[in-house]
Amino acid sequence: MPKTYYDTVQLIERMHRHFLDVLKIELEKLSIQDINNVQSLILYNIGGDDLTVGELTVRGYYLGSNVSYNVKKMVEAGYLMQERSQHDRRSVRVHLSAKGKELKNTLSEIFMRHMKELKTVELDEDKLTVINERIRLLERFWASRSTPASMSDI
Image 1: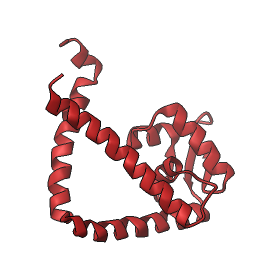
Image 2 (image 1 turned 90 degrees about the vertical axis):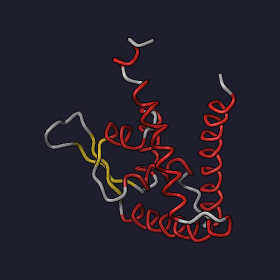
Image 3 (image 1 turned 120 degrees about the horizontal axis):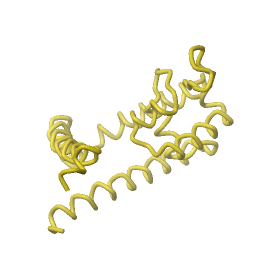
Image 4 (image 1 turned 30 degrees about the vertical axis):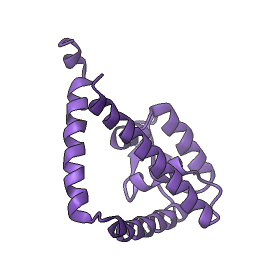
């Protein structure tokens, strides 16, 4: 594998792990112990929506079994409310509880603080926009290679 390509793959993986570590530290600072970093990120991605676990998996790119487990834990901790769909009794929809909304707002404040702090390393919103555009190109490339139709090209 060409070194530059492999370095990019490793960098993305490390960045995600570092971000989860930062989130864990932020939760610890707030003495929040009944939800972990991954769960808080799932909670943040739910936001104000009312979603099924399947929709959350597609939206957040999480592994389905992990989302189900984490959703169950967040329901038990009081961060999420769940109810059976009126149209499909097999489907369960989740949304944030009052406790979940409070944590989502706290996470928004943390992320805003991080944005302000990024300026100390010469990263502003414009530079992040350019980075995001480049990462989305790579995402589209990988997505185009991960569909069943693309497998026939191999």
